[in-house]
Image (cartoon, rainbow, N blue to C red; front, side, top):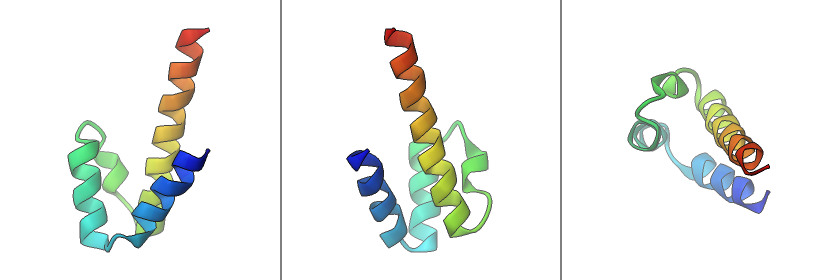
Amino acid sequence: MEDFNQLKRKLDEMSVPELYEYVKENYPENEELTLGSKKIVVRKVLNFERNRLNELEESYQ
């Protein structure tokens, strides 16, 4: 959970152009993550990462 807090802080500290550039570089297959206000984009990225982590945990069980 600490990783999510660190990621959230990192994203919150970015300017809007930096955030959109970060999302485009790190999530090129998910262009819909860049749609919306900064707050919405941050929430989408965190949800995406949380879902990816949950899928990994399920695959190990």
